[in-house]
Length: 396
Ligand code: F3S
Image 1 (cartoon, rainbow, N blue to C red):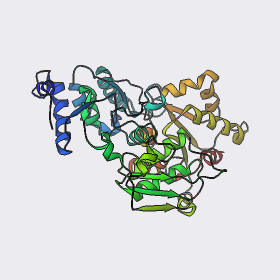
Image 2: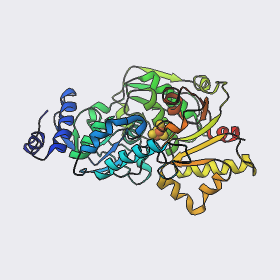
Image 3: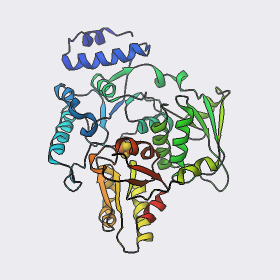
Image 4: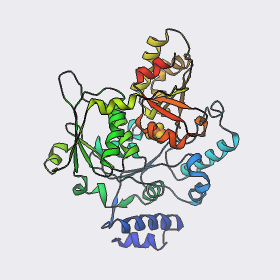
């Protein structure tokens, strides 16, 4: 990979050990992927920051010095930074998690700890180059916002943040963003159907970029931001592709369609129905993977009012969100009102990356990503998919 004179100097260590290490990571990735060089990025989003997943590897981050070169954000950590005792997190875990967080903050990285940075003032613009980790956010940035990022890992996103550049290959190049397979959806979709659809598409397309044609009729409305967020998260959970196109939504999708030939798959209503047939009895309800938007929090509150009629929930029920989004609904004291029903609103973390949720047998959720990750990362629990409304109804 070609390096400029200044990049060479960094690579040789003339700007210190931290930048040298960061540049070594970028060069190794660039060389493997035949990148022509490095390009400046607008922002970085760094994953793998829960102590549950990073463990002692954070000591490497602790040794880094200086500050990041671009706006940089963090994925959820392993606990709510204010309510961790309520969550049953041990002091030993909390101390380690605080150390991890401090190591990143010291580098100038924003400690908002969410997988939806694009909902809290860090939305990239069309055409901007990024180095984002967290598959759901990568797919959303590429496919809904038209930004350009590869699916970074935690080390490469951090290295890019420290240098302010990333290797120029993959989804940064227009020619690699062409759709490779057409997916025709033959039925109208609502709510968790987008999670089911994403799960299925990720499974079917593997690493081929899909061009998704949604069913259109006067009775069906186009997906909103939250549906697209769930679609992105589920595709990222089961597939290894970094973007999708949807006609009418993804910037430039119509132009890209002319480059598509060959393979086509069709998805019928019956394909999605299979996702709703599990018969395990849930002992917990979790919504907020990816983190709930303020609109979703408000909707859950409305549903609690309708379904609860003043009663408290009979099952553990958690809502996960970003602290800024939680605060945005607090003008109407919605969090207190939700918690009056016995539901817990948790920030900075989520069901999957926190060790606090490993004692359940079956979780009911509207998230396709949780459907994939709960069985793998949450003490062997099962996950069941249903719409938000059914999730709330099942709580009473
Ligand atoms: Fe976010 Fe955790 Fe889901 S990081 S996408 S809420 S697994």
